[in-house]
Length: 239
Length: 239
DNA sequence: CGTCGGGTTGAGTCCATTCAACTTCGGTGG
DNA sequence: CCACCGAAGTTGAATGGACTCAACCCGACG
Image (cartoon, rainbow over all chains, first blue to last red):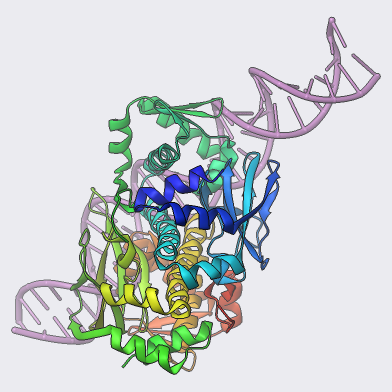
């Protein structure tokens, strides 16, 4: 059940059997959410953190004027609100973009891990640090990349992350969003999102049909995006 | 010497004397950097983390086309690359925007803290989580706020953070950047940065002369920015 | 006194937005 | 069975925002 989490953590460093079983004991009840439901709502102070077992979810924030911005996309194996364990109050909501299966980890048990298992604590900490590294890349994309490059970058990142948790098929992956939702990732209007997508299609680097992204020319896509996966820390090292 | 760090950490939760002295023992040599120098260079694998004691610094990333984006601004008391302790390889550089005084914390000693002091570990972890929360707000600003609102937001954030470490004077604070550097924060051209700044001045909410920001009407600035400081976790709570 | 970095201004172009219309497709009820 | 409906995608036209390029101002400094 926790395979995807194990895959993610063990990409960064060795994960011992005792650590795996401690994690398993920390994870409590399982739950399912329908597409469009909030996994966690804005401003809440949950007593547990949510581990995404399957599906796609997004962190979002609404502004006064009603516009919405996604600040992160989450996939299987992501601890979508591990940070709430210490932040206490969640400053954003988390939305299921597809049907989602999740498991809940009690904050008290997470705290217990920090008391007795320093190495596992560091791995969980690292998990939130990679999250931050992804945020930084998004900032770079929004500030200085062209919209086409930003989109290409997003596809590179998602493909790389999904591959870690074995959710790719060849050079394709499932991406069950609408163009309007993607627009809220890139900070675009839906109309322009549509045009940027057409421009990516015309480039021949990738395509997106029936909720599936097909990468037609990886090198071209990486080149368009100026993509460098270093920030994902995908190498095993003592932490 | 570590006053600013203590001020920041104790904003989130009580910081005991023994924790303070452990931190003090962790911090090694002090160093000074001139404006324009790199505190840490991109792609490096430092064996220590850098605590900013005084001055302004920025994390930056260059793209292939030569454009630059700042992904964070750092002030006194910020552990500018605490995350490098676990990420190992730094995916970005850190630049001194003013003369900077820093202190270095050996990674081995930080690791030692995680082995013996769970509560302090959580506070340091939290420090990096607040960092992430700030990133998220920047993403929202870049994606969905108007440029004027984005600038107003930045001033609100900086004022709030600087107040914690007692670097404000009344409703003013020192901000030793050029407009070109601010443009690299907001993701704008220098020309447009200049025009947005004029627009902010005309609004009467704030002004920026001789490297000093004067907040003339806090409520109006907050309103322009749609600013809510929750994400900075500025309340003391058991963590 | 000349130079240089930083700030400011104007003009022209291109990018992204809004608004509105139209298509396609799957679902649903008469 | 098919007519209708709504959600998602696509297109066109007009507006306004942001960029580039270029010029110019100004104060600090050698």
